[in-house]
Amino acid sequence: MTSKTELDPNGDGPLEQLDWAKGGGMLPAIVQHAGNGAVLMLGYMNPEALASTRASGHVTFWSRSKRRLWTKGETSGHFLQLRHIAADCDGDTLLVLAEPMGPVCHQGTATCWGENPPQTAVQPLAFLEALEQTIIQRIATRPAGSYTANLLTQGTRRIAQKVGEEGLELALAAVAQSDREIIGEAADLLYHLLLLLQVKNLSLAQVVGELESRHDALRRNA
Image (tube, rainbow, N blue to C red; front, side, top):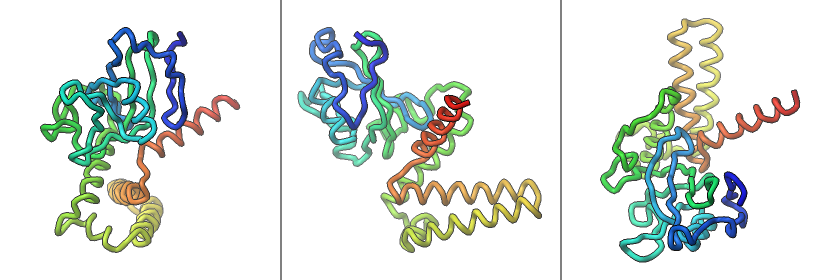
């Protein structure tokens, strides 16, 4: 058995290396937020649930109470968008990295351990993920009076234009304005950038992944 088996969500993957027999045909699947690392929930997968997860891109479990495959979000719309799956060293537990499309818990909280589960001090920028989730909700609900909803009605071109405008304002602030004004303009740019990514069905986690990939390439070539 290989250690830390990686399962490509877009490929076939070494399913034969997983120890389904140990758990009676099911493996525990720990779901972790791909962006901020928070542990979201625990479910169980059988081979069909794992195959469905990888084929659809939405995290799917075997429901022990319903006795059927169950895709998280199938009724609420709060899907878990698959980013990566890995098996542990014994091949009997799965770690699923996913991006939630809304509250994860049936009680409406961000995780099954409440709205603010215990976390380490290595997440100082986790608010960006919370802001991204707010933007996702605004896109879905379009509440009256919302600035985000108003921008959405103007279309992607206008949102892209706002990103350009905010980038220019930040550049000008960096040359001639105070630190406080620079921070304010940077915040405006980040918000509009997050919105643009979402309307293009992209995410901050994917941007971070690209930066990590470039960093790794530079280290390999150093």
